[in-house]
Length: 97
Image (cartoon, rainbow, N blue to C red; front, side, top):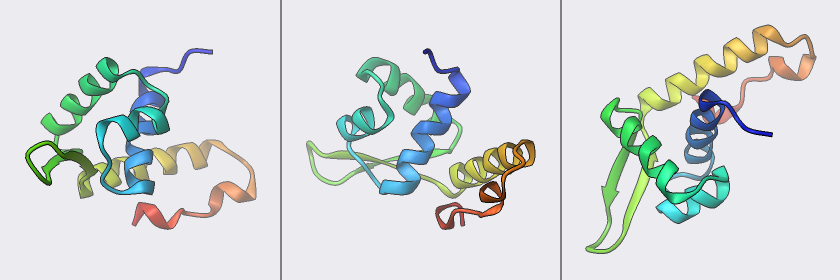
């Protein structure tokens, strides 16, 4: 089953929020995306200040979620939980704050 664009974007932000700064290949595996598509999403996120690119050494670049990216994740979680009726949806994950 194909994921919607919004689901892919949320998955990428969630991976970065849960696992901290990651290399491109690690995000690829955790978000289940190919490199070309992931790079396009990351470029979009960087342009909109949702993710930042950090250079650790000449060859090592990692990507980290920004506070604005965490805010977007929090809003997404709130919308999804408002649409769900289970008690589990009322628990706010600590990674959103």
